[in-house]
Picture 1 (cartoon, rainbow, N blue to C red):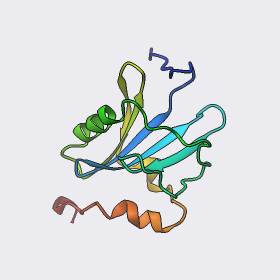
Picture 2: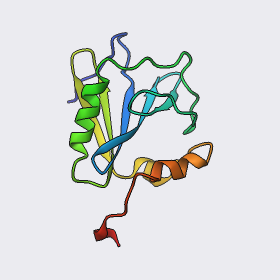
Picture 3: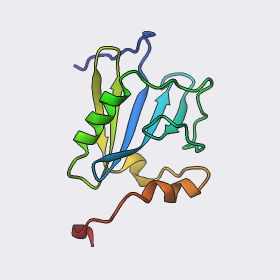
Length: 133
Protein backbone atom coordinates (compact mmCIF):
# COMPACT_ATOMS: atom_id res chain seq x y z
CA UNK A 1 0.00 0.00 0.00
CA UNK A 2 1.32 3.44 -0.94
CA UNK A 3 1.03 6.55 1.16
CA UNK A 4 -1.42 9.16 -0.12
CA UNK A 5 0.63 12.32 -0.57
CA UNK A 6 -1.04 15.65 0.09
CA UNK A 7 0.22 19.17 -0.47
CA UNK A 8 -0.21 22.06 1.97
CA UNK A 9 -3.79 22.63 0.74
CA UNK A 10 -4.72 18.96 1.29
CA UNK A 11 -4.86 18.21 -2.44
CA UNK A 12 -2.55 15.97 -4.46
CA UNK A 13 0.77 17.87 -4.65
CA UNK A 14 2.26 19.28 -7.82
CA UNK A 15 4.42 16.92 -9.86
CA UNK A 16 7.92 18.36 -10.29
CA UNK A 17 9.70 16.72 -13.23
CA UNK A 18 13.43 17.37 -13.51
CA UNK A 19 15.11 16.81 -16.89
CA UNK A 20 18.63 15.69 -15.92
CA UNK A 21 21.24 15.43 -18.67
CA UNK A 22 24.69 14.05 -17.81
CA UNK A 23 24.00 14.61 -14.10
CA UNK A 24 22.82 18.22 -14.38
CA UNK A 25 19.22 19.48 -14.34
CA UNK A 26 18.42 21.74 -17.29
CA UNK A 27 14.61 22.01 -17.16
CA UNK A 28 11.83 21.61 -14.60
CA UNK A 29 8.28 20.73 -15.62
CA UNK A 30 5.45 21.38 -13.15
CA UNK A 31 2.18 19.50 -13.57
CA UNK A 32 -0.67 20.66 -11.35
CA UNK A 33 -4.29 19.69 -10.93
CA UNK A 34 -3.84 16.08 -11.97
CA UNK A 35 -7.44 15.23 -11.01
CA UNK A 36 -9.04 18.56 -11.88
CA UNK A 37 -7.99 21.57 -13.94
CA UNK A 38 -4.62 20.32 -15.20
CA UNK A 39 -1.86 22.82 -15.95
CA UNK A 40 1.71 22.37 -17.12
CA UNK A 41 4.60 24.81 -16.94
CA UNK A 42 8.29 24.62 -17.76
CA UNK A 43 11.08 26.42 -15.92
CA UNK A 44 14.83 26.64 -15.86
CA UNK A 45 16.34 25.45 -12.55
CA UNK A 46 16.54 29.12 -11.41
CA UNK A 47 12.73 29.17 -11.80
CA UNK A 48 12.63 31.33 -14.94
CA UNK A 49 9.34 30.47 -16.65
CA UNK A 50 9.79 29.26 -20.22
CA UNK A 51 7.47 30.23 -23.09
CA UNK A 52 6.66 26.72 -24.22
CA UNK A 53 3.82 24.27 -23.96
CA UNK A 54 3.65 20.51 -23.77
CA UNK A 55 -0.14 20.50 -24.21
CA UNK A 56 -2.04 21.62 -21.08
CA UNK A 57 -2.36 25.36 -20.39
CA UNK A 58 -0.04 27.31 -18.09
CA UNK A 59 -0.99 27.90 -14.48
CA UNK A 60 -2.66 31.25 -13.84
CA UNK A 61 -1.37 32.76 -11.65
CA UNK A 62 2.13 31.33 -12.21
CA UNK A 63 3.56 28.91 -9.67
CA UNK A 64 5.75 30.44 -7.00
CA UNK A 65 9.21 28.93 -6.62
CA UNK A 66 8.80 25.79 -4.45
CA UNK A 67 10.28 26.18 -0.96
CA UNK A 68 12.18 22.90 -1.26
CA UNK A 69 13.37 23.48 -4.85
CA UNK A 70 17.09 23.48 -3.98
CA UNK A 71 16.73 20.20 -2.08
CA UNK A 72 14.71 18.68 -4.93
CA UNK A 73 17.25 19.83 -7.56
CA UNK A 74 20.13 18.33 -5.59
CA UNK A 75 18.28 15.04 -5.21
CA UNK A 76 17.34 14.92 -8.91
CA UNK A 77 20.94 15.52 -9.95
CA UNK A 78 22.23 12.90 -7.51
CA UNK A 79 19.75 10.36 -8.89
CA UNK A 80 20.77 11.28 -12.44
CA UNK A 81 24.50 10.81 -11.88
CA UNK A 82 26.06 8.28 -14.21
CA UNK A 83 23.33 8.39 -16.85
CA UNK A 84 23.13 10.49 -19.98
CA UNK A 85 19.44 11.36 -19.52
CA UNK A 86 16.74 10.73 -16.98
CA UNK A 87 13.62 12.59 -15.98
CA UNK A 88 13.31 12.52 -12.21
CA UNK A 89 9.78 13.10 -10.88
CA UNK A 90 9.55 14.40 -7.33
CA UNK A 91 6.98 15.81 -4.92
CA UNK A 92 8.15 18.70 -2.74
CA UNK A 93 6.04 18.38 0.39
CA UNK A 94 6.24 20.82 3.32
CA UNK A 95 8.33 18.40 5.40
CA UNK A 96 10.26 16.38 2.76
CA UNK A 97 10.90 15.57 -0.87
CA UNK A 98 9.46 12.29 -2.17
CA UNK A 99 10.56 10.40 -5.29
CA UNK A 100 7.74 9.66 -7.73
CA UNK A 101 9.51 7.93 -10.62
CA UNK A 102 12.55 7.99 -12.89
CA UNK A 103 12.12 7.60 -16.63
CA UNK A 104 14.49 7.61 -19.57
CA UNK A 105 11.65 7.90 -22.10
CA UNK A 106 9.07 10.49 -20.95
CA UNK A 107 5.76 9.93 -22.74
CA UNK A 108 7.42 7.13 -24.68
CA UNK A 109 9.57 9.74 -26.44
CA UNK A 110 6.49 11.21 -28.13
CA UNK A 111 5.68 14.46 -26.39
CA UNK A 112 6.43 17.40 -28.70
CA UNK A 113 6.71 20.97 -27.47
CA UNK A 114 5.17 24.11 -28.89
CA UNK A 115 6.71 26.09 -30.41
CA UNK A 116 8.58 23.29 -32.15
CA UNK A 117 11.98 25.00 -31.63
CA UNK A 118 11.91 23.77 -28.00
CA UNK A 119 12.24 20.16 -29.21
CA UNK A 120 15.79 20.92 -30.36
CA UNK A 121 16.52 23.12 -27.33
CA UNK A 122 15.77 20.22 -24.97
CA UNK A 123 18.29 18.05 -26.84
CA UNK A 124 21.16 20.56 -26.99
CA UNK A 125 22.69 19.55 -23.64
CA UNK A 126 22.78 15.85 -24.53
CA UNK A 127 25.89 14.25 -26.00
CA UNK A 128 25.38 10.79 -27.43
CA UNK A 129 27.45 8.43 -25.25
CA UNK A 130 30.09 6.41 -27.10
CA UNK A 131 28.39 3.15 -26.10
CA UNK A 132 25.30 4.16 -28.15
CA UNK A 133 27.23 4.73 -31.39
